[in-house]
Image (cartoon, rainbow, N blue to C red; front, side, top):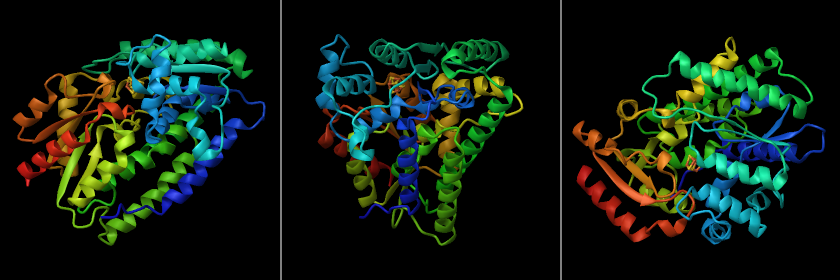
Length: 401
Ligand code: SF4
């Protein structure tokens, strides 16, 4: 069964091409590298061009070559069990492989003037980015965040705001200017707009039949990650939303004869995306929603309170929350999207995005939501057993239909 392409994808390809071209343009604007859910609005407000190493790592995963590069990083003393984004990205760098070459023609990553991360997602990202800081001999600034939050209170927000202000002071000599609050408000407003439309795009999958799949979402999310906080990125999702609305109005299903709707929790398995997309499509199964794609929705952003709302938005992310919050969130999502079950991806090198490890799957079963757990990895295909996974998924589908 064919995987139905979205027409907007062509426009997205052009947008991304232009965005990456801007990173390599010698226009005097410094390049900052930023973690995927880090303080990008601040960087854009201060005039930085922003590159996201995690996007590059995901491209390495999609290229199916990550496992070839991981040993080069391991040889430098990094354990094979840690984040395979880190190990494959540094490994490919050491091997002289750049995933931007095939996609956009660039043989190297855009050279950073500064590297910025926030530990709201994990600690591995700090070690990953510091490696590049040492290599390029550029400053690396971190925002130390919180995890396992039951609620996002003022003390946690205050601690992040304090660090964001320090970050702005540290960035000023590199940017050649201080943080201008009017520019930050504008940057937050644009980021908020992009987030709202990205959420609308994802929510379109609540329709029966759903006009998009998880596999569309993880492709279409590129502007939400890479162009977060840009007007062009926000506008893209208006175009995509129109296409999806048309599909809904005309009853066009992303998966012909949609029979089963599922929810995906955990990282994508980038080298096996096509295999899994075909597996589900052939069986009339649509994975209609995921925790992962939803992670780039920053509902709390508010241009009237730029720093506070950036702090709140960064802490309200699913990955920062405690198990109670996660259980309630996933139940809500399953309900909203009309999913009949959940696939948990136990991602071997990203415990931070593997939510099956502290009883969440069992709690879902107690709520009469069927679940299945598969083993894999976002980048390292050697940690994915195709036969075993197919057998597990087939048995699960047989049980719930
Ligand atoms: S959240 Fe997971 S995939 Fe992302 S950098 Fe951290 S360990 Fe790697």
